Image (tube, helix red, strand yellow):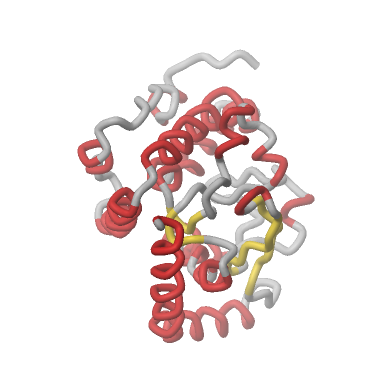
Length: 237
């Protein structure tokens, strides 16, 4: 019953959202066409519901061949591959809005585990991989909420002269996996509604810790997932 009700709300709210967002989409699409490399949308293959692949949509924010140059799939703050308009779209998270089309089509949900490239999914433990996409991936989710500063963390680690991929393997993926397992075990309409509210609240107050007050059973966030720890710890090269 939960999945049926959730899909109904996804269709209704994504359809309504597409109509309401048109006044935002149209100017952005024009600006993207006139700037950078003229690309409007970026489509990348991600792992989705029941581990089936689908093409996730975003507004284009980086150079066309970004995945094959520089740091590949790892993006840092002030990444030279990001276009000037793309920087604003990424910081504001507006670049994620086209995914509402994915929601309407049934590839995604408003709330769920973050859809990842296959190479990233492979880095999770077998327990996480088994349960991760038993539900549709979401535009937002518990992992997205608690990793809004992911680029900032990775950038700080790279600025210390380290390989960002090492930080992902040692700290980011283990905690993200724990969060997705928590969501799998606590999934409900009330959980989803709370995550949606917290997503909007985080736009208003980006440093809010309200998520920990609402979800008291969340896995404890490791100290390693903080800029202060990164900058004050000697990391073996």
